[in-house]
Amino acid sequence: MRVLVVEDEPTIAAQLAEALGTAGYVVDLAENGVDGHFQGSDENQPFDAVVLDLGLPRMDGLTVLKKWRAAGRGMPVLILTARDNWHEKVAGIDAGADDYLTKPFHMEELLARVRALIRRAGGHASAELVCGEVVLDTRYSRVTVGGQTLTLTSHEYRVLDYLMHHPGQIVSRSDLIEHIYAQDFDRDSNTVEVFIARLRKKLPEGVIETVRGLGYRLVAP
Image 1 (cartoon, one colour):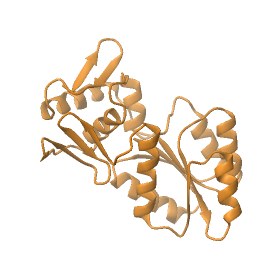
Image 2 (tube, helix red, strand yellow):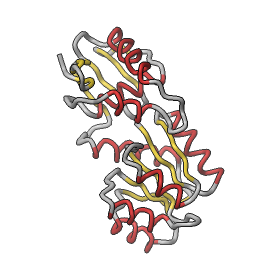
Image 3 (tube, rainbow, N blue to C red):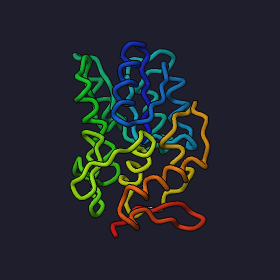
Image 4 (cartoon, helix red, strand yellow):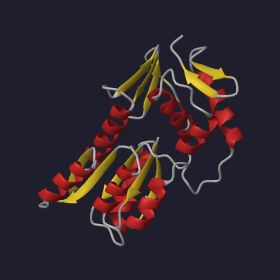
């Protein structure tokens, strides 16, 4: 899953990138509102969630959010606000934010809120995503099959994570590429097939279907 962080404070941005990356997310960073708006507006660079600071240089976060929503960009957005600026929270929610967090915040709470936003966007109520015997616990980035823990590489986990968030849906190779690689990463579409092949060796037979000419689909055998 891919997350855009729009934060102008270098220390906070670095901490967010490290925590989200450790949790299994692909993270793109923007340090001002103009760059953040541009990255979030690109339909060819889809994000599963956005962490958006409201106090940004060049274009404030509230304006960025309003522009995204006016353009039909529907990705879940978590806004960061100053502790005492309750009016910013109200304005952010009214502008289309899905959740908010006040600074300073505990990183575990932010991660929990991001997980919840992504789950809700995919129609999932639980922190555990289930497909037959396969269970992906989004809280701990852990996958089990029949109760036995699987050992996955970071990219194998990201591929399975995206498929588990979209069960029964056909997911194209290009979709997977966009959601498992950061924007500045040297992407190779052939590696997706490698990750799928590796996952099939570790998962029950038939869990990942190939839909000829279209992509892949996760099904419960």
